[in-house]
Structures are given as structure tokens and as C-alpha cells.
Length: 81
Image (tube, rainbow, N blue to C red; front, side, top):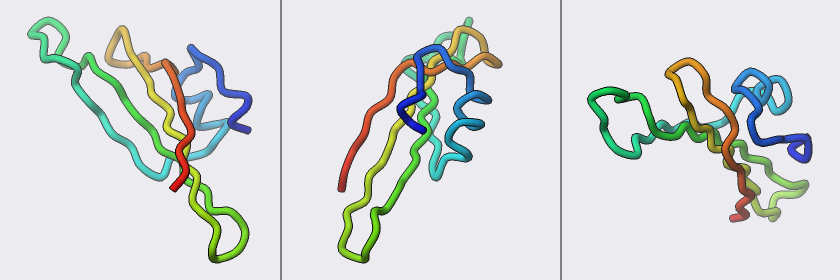
């Protein structure tokens, strides 16, 4: 399903595709008096492979915004532990 991610997808589209994230984080890039909400929203999805010795794989989806209500996919990356 993650192969269907596309830049510009909305939060709702990602949640429909992948479900609810395991973790979320909101980071401010720099505080601005005119736009204090600017920054990035990161969702983390985690999957464990079959068997108890398998490593975990995580997908980090990073959203950006131009307005407080309109987050969109900016990038994503896979990580293995």
C-alpha cells in the first residue's frame, strides 16, 4: 500500500491508504509571529515481519502545510531496525 503514496496527498488520503499512524510528531521549523503553525507533521507506521526474530520496518511520512488546516505529503522514507 505504501507504494501508492504520492507527494501532495492529504492527511485524509494517507489515513485511508495506510490507516492510523503508530506515532505522530509536530515540529516547528522556526517560529513566525505571522504563521506560528508552520513546520512539519510526521507520521510513523511500523510493521514487524513474520517470526519473532524479524526486524521492524518503519515508514515515516512527512507532511508540510501552507495553511493550518491543509497538510499535504512532502516526503517519506523507510527505516529498518
